[in-house]
Length: 424
Image 1: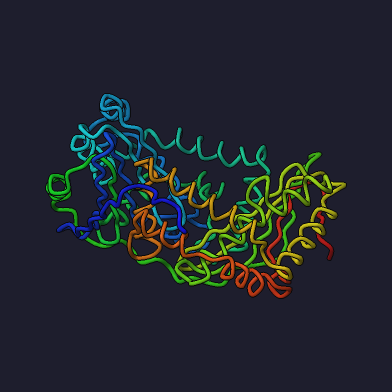
Image 2: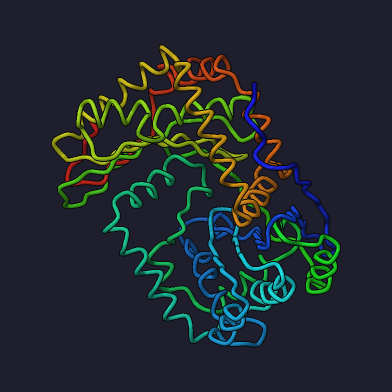
């Protein structure tokens, strides 16, 4: 017997605009809000090879918010604020993402402003030094956040290049970057082909299509192709930090997105290390008292699948913490997942899906992410049906088959602390 559906079925509409951008729409008449998630193929991986421009995309993202459409930063942001638009711009390895949440009646005016921000940014030269200072402060801030520092290092070693670049950039590039390089790069990368615009909530599809066709008229071209993907570096790395704490992050291989093992593997990882009922939490933290934090997560796309297992502890306990984690991993891979663990994880996945369905911003983001990573968006009912169809036997088989002794042999391991816990 399956759980009740997350919400009434809502259709996803797909329309390719004349410029080549893909518009995804999920109208929901039961809400008054609407959200936009606009993705451009302009991420850190598109920066030139080597470290010469590692930070170009990051600085471009910061500069985009300093005025657009002939308005300076203050005037432009005052227009968005007057409409009550909550917005966020971020840069990751493959895309620059612009998100906005607002009341449905202000959707068309907001589209005009967001189009200006991406297509007609001011990119003022006098903003370079403040932005340079902000980017350097973010880099310096890693020294006070060992978890984030360990995560950056883990991605650098565990992910294939150039998808392993961080969203912080490198100090040398940030210090030397000039405005003309950023302007030229953005003009080259901000192209409609490959861009995704996802809108969810209070919307009228044809009105939305007509508005985007109007504001994006004349926008042409395709961005540069993603560079060749190369093998991860792998290995161990110790980052010295004088501290009474040690933060550990380890990376293990997982299935790619859309692989038949993806959902069962996710369920297994959640049983292993997600929440206070997980195996790692109960064993490493509660029973043995070795750490103040222990966790496991899983992320995947078309190029990699990564299981991340981490812990925060003291220098005196780090070696024992690592040993305890591996003992728990060995037992999990050998004995599989218990029925009660599976039931708990499955209920958690359904609850999480229900909460996602109640947020238009989460739905817009999810539509764009699915299109970008899977080649097509998924409705809540599609995801719910997959969770309902998941069985204990499927998850147990993937846990035993994938999380065996060979899976644990060569993880990427990162430690931030006073001394290296890794044996030579």
